[in-house]
Length: 224
Image 1 (tube, rainbow, N blue to C red):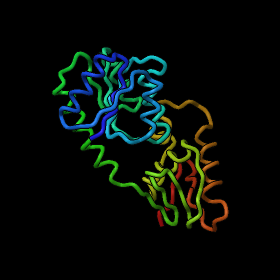
Image 2 (cartoon, rainbow, N blue to C red):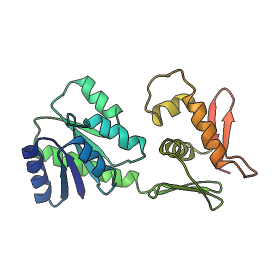
Image 3 (tube, rainbow, N blue to C red):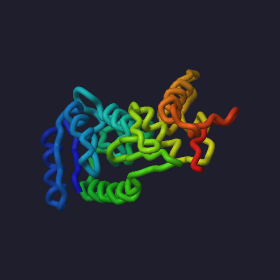
Image 4 (cartoon, rainbow, N blue to C red):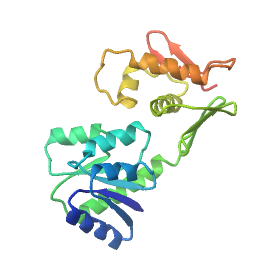
C-alpha cells in the first residue's frame, strides 16, 4: 500500500512515515498543503493521511479540491480539533475517517488498512456504460458511439453520478448533495446550467437523447 502523509510538523510526519514503512507500506511525506495537493492529484496513492491545519492550503480545502476533480482516494483526517462539529465538517468535505490527536499508531494503522480494503472494493469498477456512452474512471475520458467527448471536471462528476443511477430519476437534492456537496438549496440555477451544458455535449449529433428531464422530478440517463 502506498500512503501520502500531509503533515506540517516534520518530526511527527517523519515518525508516521517510519511507522508505515516498518509496517510494510510505502509512504511519502508533504509538509505543506500546496505540496500535498500536488502529490495527491497524481492519483498514485492508495490512502491519504491529511492534517487538518496546514500552511498554504488547509486540509479541508485539499480534500474538497480533489473530490471536486473526481479523485476518490480514501482520506483519513488527523486533527487536534476533536469536537463533533469539526468531525462532521471534515467528513462532509469528503474525508472518509477522522482521527483526533494525540492518537495511537496501532489505531491509525488499523484505520488506514481498513480504508484501503474498502477503497479497493469501491474502485474495482473502472468503467461505466449507459447505452452507447462509456466512461473510463481511470483515464477520466468519455465516449459515445466511439466519439470522444470532452468534459470539465464538474461535468464529468455530474455525468458519473447520473450514469451510476441510469434508468432511475435523480432529483435536484440528490445532485446538490452528491455532485456539489451542498446540504442546502443555494437557490441558483447551477444545476440547470450544468445539465444544459452536459446535454449539449453528450446528445448533440445523436438521434436518441440520453439525458432526459423528468418534469417536476429531476433528471435521468436512459440505460436502454
